[in-house]
Length: 214
Image (cartoon, rainbow, N blue to C red; front, side, top):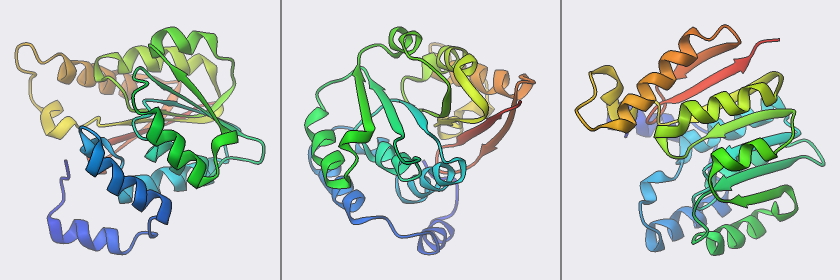
């Protein structure tokens, strides 16, 4: 979901750092062979993830939701030497494409993958974590946030994707629309939490950026 007029979106894309060839290839293969290819981060958001990673220079990144590995590759671009990205996904059926493109991107030795329920896996991890990217099941966003916040390094960055949810968050959720209600609750909690400094970027489908204060 893009909220900008197409001409503006195209102009912004043209004036954003080009996508590395490995990500172009991953995008093509995801659209050809994988269900729901719109879940990819895309050009501008992917470069934003890379930029934020370069700015924070994390030693440890936690990604909740791997999909085909596009965002993992972007986030790894800013890792410190010897750093690692921990990524969690409940689905192991896409390991084949992750393996292929993690190898092409040269990040195999930087990635620690977990398969299973993130709510169960997160408590087994040790901090501090410098950067978190939440991009998984929307109904659990607030649970993930509450789990990772105590593990964050001071000044760490929490990112969450799809927080505008195609614009649905600005109106009352329809009966049975648990995902919209969950995202509204997440956004409201972020807004009032004094432990963080949040900015909701209207980038693509909404990217929440929250710096941990302290």
